[in-house]
Every structure is written in C-alpha cells, then in structure tokens.
Image (cartoon, rainbow over all chains, first blue to last red):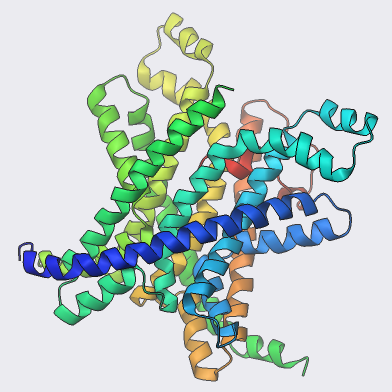
Length: 212
Length: 248
C-alpha cells in the first residue's frame, strides 16, 4: 500500500474548500470569543450578576466542546445552519477562556491607576476605555493569541454537526474511495502547515510585547 | 412537567454512569501517557545537547500543531490501511490524547525546570552532586510545585477532549448521550445530562489536583494558601497564575 497520487489529486481541492470553512469558522468564532470574553471579564466585577456569569462560564469551560456543539445543534431553531451553530458555540466556549485571560490582565493593572481614576472622578466609560483596558489588554495579547491556534485546532469537531470543513471532506472521500490514509494524512499536514507558522508568528508577538 | 427531566436522568443513570466510567478510564490512561511523555521530553528540552533539544522541539511542535481528533482518526483508520495491524479504538484514542496533551505538558515541564532559580543549580554543583541527584533531590521537587497547577488544567483539557472518542465508536459518556437521545427523541435532555456529569467529573479532578498541590507545597515547607477545609479546594489558589498557564 503506497501513497496514491491520483487519489491525492481528487482529495486536495476538496480539502482546500474545507480549509476555507475551517479558517472562516476560526476567525469569526475568535472575534466572538474576544468580544464576549471581554464583556464577561467586565461584568464579573459587578455585584450580584458577576458570580452568576462566572458560574455559567465555569460550567462551559469544564465541559466538552463536542457535547456543547451537539446540545446546541439539537436545540437550535431549524433556520440556523450548522456552520452558524458551530461558530457560535466555538466562540462562546472560548469566551470562557479569554474571559480568564482578560481578568488576569485587569487584575494586573496597578491599584494606583484605579485610585487615580477615582481622584479625577472619571466616568466609568473613560475609566475602562482610557485607563484600565489599554494597560490590561496590552499585557495579555500573547495569551489571547494562543487561543486562536487552540480554536483552529478544535474546528474539526464541527464535523460532528455536519459542517463541511476539512475533516468532513476527508472522512467522506475516505469512505467513498476506501482510502483513509491519504485523506487523513493530508488533513494532518494542512493543520501543521497552518498552525506551526502561526505559532511562530505569535511567539514573535509575545517577545515584542514582553519587551514593553 | 417538572419531574420529567429528573425521571429521564434517573431511569438512565446506570447507563450514564457506565459511560462516565469509560470517560474516566480514558482520561486516567491518557493522563498517565501524557505525564510520562511530558517529563521525558520536557527534561530533554532543558539539556545542552542540541540533538536532545531538537528531538524535544520536533515532538512538541508537531503534536501541538495537529488536532487530537485528526491524530485519533489517523491512528484508527489509516494505520490498518498501511500496515497489517489494527489498533483497538480505545487504545488509539488514549494514544492520540496522550501524545497531544503530552506535547503541551512537555513545554510546562521545560518552563518549570528553567524557572527554578539558578543559584539552586550552582549550589548543587558546588556540592559536587551528579546530574541525576541534582534533578531528583533539588530541581524537580521545586519545579513540580510550579508545574502542578498547569498540569491540573491539562488534565481537564484531556478529559474534555476525550469526548471525541465517541466519533470512532467508543461508548463513553458522549456516546451514551447520543444513543439515549436517539432512542428517546429527547436529545436536549440526553446531552444536558451528559454535560452535568462531565462537570462533576471535572470538579473531582480539580479537587484531586489541588490536594496534590498542597502536598507538594508542604514538602517544600511552603504553607498552603489561606483557608482550609474541602470547600477551599474548589476555589482557585492564587490570582492569575493558573488560568492562562501558557498551556493552550
């Protein structure tokens, strides 16, 4: 059983189609995670609502993404496509992680900064927008970057809810032609091809921001 | 109306418990493999020898780059095609999860060993200790306390990732939920119950790791963080340090 190049020629275009969906789901999901995570990190500091939001996020963080995907997939109204469900769940799941990252950044801001805001009696919007967040987010950029790669690697799970990403095509074609070896190996190679350069890029970012 | 969800779960509790048992077993076996790999590769990564460092970074970059799901499918479906052997699906799952999480763990081990103050190493050299003795008696006990919180997160990650074994036909908690959902038509309840059980397993694992952390800190003569009792184990120990961890 050696590598079958003819089959490879059939598989690669389909996998590249899948890669587009994978990257799309990752990027949009990441935007959701970044925005929602920030909102959660801020709301967590509010009195009664804070602990409730925290508990919900903790539940999301300690249960499997795959089960969450299936849960929401069956719960979702029929008008919602699998891809939309996938992106939403991916985004909310990772928001639980990014919220913790933002929190550590916010807690890392020196106490004097808060006191100065109070002394100047700045409105809350300016406290967060002009003083706290610019300092907090800068420090956590590398940690946030890591989650982009983590999300990218979790996208094959969307295959379980019939999103047509790489694994979906690989598994379909592999079954059709009885050749899983090339199909799955190629998916693995494509993953390494995208995630290793991004990891190197993020490490470079990390060094740049660590120097500040 | 209100009693129906509870009935659903109580009727199927033995099935769910069995599924949870499989999930727990895969988690423990995967963690054992990941731990051994992380320790060996992590220590290799701290050596001066460029070959050892090359091997370590090749392993971590590769297995951190591939999704566990892809790795698992490859082992379960590609290996029978290119070799005369067929891996048992559970074994393939444990191998894939262990290799994947082991790569993250190796980075944690490497970073924790490097974070032990340089003076400790210098002192052991002044005392003429061998490398093995220095590692065993001085460096590793200190690095161990440092790496445990992140290891705890990784164990949870592995437990969560183990849900993918249902896609290759292992009857774990997720698979039980899927089957019960199909059989009863109550998919929401079926998966909801599984989510709650996963959450409980995670809490058990978290408490276990916190106990290990306490022990490691006590052995180094560090007092445990404020507050005793079982409930304190559920609270995060120190601010910030564990959440981001650099793991994922």
